[in-house]
Length: 305
Image (tube, rainbow, N blue to C red; front, side, top):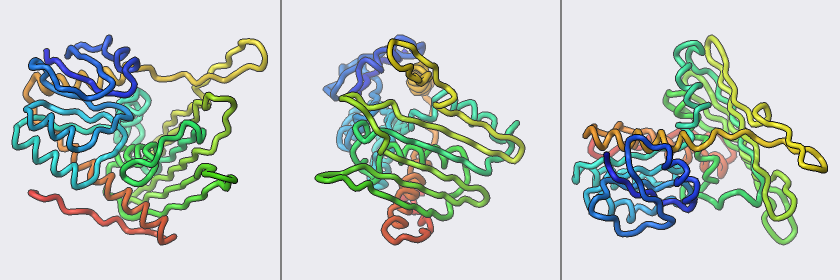
């Protein structure tokens, strides 16, 4: 059973997930540190979004690396890290944790089966400006980039073109938030994503936000929606609708899968290629926003392939 270090700026979350592990023992830290001799692999998790140098240092030390975060690495970094992992014959795995959410797993498994081939993906991701993350290294809000990755994963076909619109809310003396809508055209199929960080909030605590995913296939449809997955709570005063979350078991499943691959000596799946597609899609979104017109997706050539 491999021993892993998990680096995250949310230690309680990952310590909770660690209690559900079956395939690994772990230590959770808020910041990267020199790994112990028995450490076989390292997980860079959540908003930590470790820089490429930190990841490469672990790979060069002969440790397997899992990056479990919103897409945050550039094309050049992904290719360089993939090459470093191959030189050291270790696993370099990158994954958007949202792929492991139970709701997303159920939808994905039904595509090609009861739902038929995916034709339309519709995503809403709304949050209050107080809780919105700063611009990701890829140049778009990290939450939006994560949803673009989800759309590419669910459709599973090459992306042809992108059209994106943005509206920034005016606010005296500062940034009032932004709304972005992204249309992704596949052949066949399409996806439409709304991202909005202008939800109102009261007091010092931001609201939980709202997410929904709808997938229409050739023979059926599926939906997961925070509004439908809410419970009314009466705590005195006005009742509140509390979103029923999906827990942390999916994070444990993600780490268990990584540990099982290390233990079995399996070659990592070619997930770096799928993340390069995300980078290409983000670049097309940025061109569309700048030029205010449809942008064709320029698929980059992978070196060494």
